[in-house]
Length: 298
Image 1 (cartoon, helix red, strand yellow):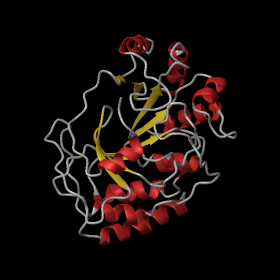
Image 2 (cartoon, one colour):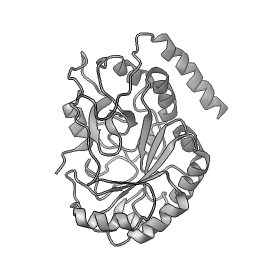
Image 3 (cartoon, one colour):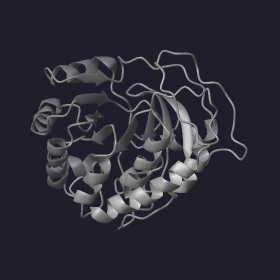
Image 4 (cartoon, helix red, strand yellow):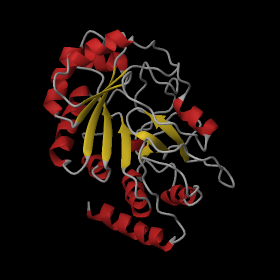
């Protein structure tokens, strides 16, 4: 822990020296659309802003940014296609300095509600995730979110890095090891019980930020809402997000009526549903980069 804090501290000194990096000004998600404009050489590691039903106008930060998806899951519904590269160890794919340099190129009138670590794979596989979160928070005012499949939540170093974020959205699509393997198709060493235990430990210590559980419902788990709700009760998140794949992928989305029935199984938990939430109007700075990371909506 001490070495992590020292390393982040040393990097933040560099961030402060980059005095021309503009501080963002978070605006209401119903505000005017994002104005256009490209950086001189385009953006490689930032994408969007995207119109998110969960987060509003969300500027993506991709710490992986590889041609191939980098992930330790191969979910049935992934819009990025099959997983072909699953690293055994965390490593640095994109430097923190490179992310800050691109932020320096963003238009001043860019309307952003949240800065979101996501992209072409699992963000926690980037070894410099915590360092980059801290550095970004030094130069921007918007809240920072991380979208994670929760596969490494049982690791203390990963939890410590995620504590730096204002919002953590973690995946929970199953209620058993067998269902987990059918839907998320993880690497052999990843166990469902470890993920649940890691989420419980994270919840216990993560008091200043918001923990949301996203549950993707498809044909495989459509009849298991009550059982999954039971798992949610053990974790006690701040919010539950009920989703179904509306972007092009190998699975078909459930109907609005099916999702409404599923929502009712979760009782009094604070809830968002993909069919009910409004999406802000945005215009992306990086249409091609956004499409490469998110795919098309049905």
